[in-house]
Amino acid sequence: MKQIRIVDEDGKPIRYAYLEHENLKFEFEFYAHEEGEGDYEIIQTVAPAEFEFIATLFGLNPMQDILSIVQEISDSGRGGDLINALNSKEIKNELHKWGSYISFRDEDIKS
Image 1 (spheres, rainbow, N blue to C red):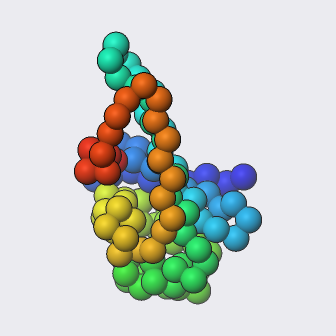
Image 2 (image 1 turned 60 degrees about the vertical axis):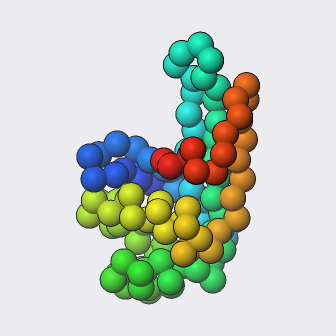
């Protein structure tokens, strides 16, 4: 399975993207480093109907493979913009969150 590492403008990984069946998945996992922290995982699933919108939003060719589009977005330093568009639902997606030993709100999860 091909996986794209999406980075922010500082080169920090903020999501990993891959295709599962026909859907595009964006995934992030955080593992606790200190006592009192917990682990959490975020998976945002985008249906193929949104692929053209993603390309258009970032001024890219919608005829390209979606993983190539995501790679180009990340390589251009706009990975953070992509994640913001997912989080704000500008790009329609289904959100799955999982956490252990912590309580969190949507606004607490930014990356």
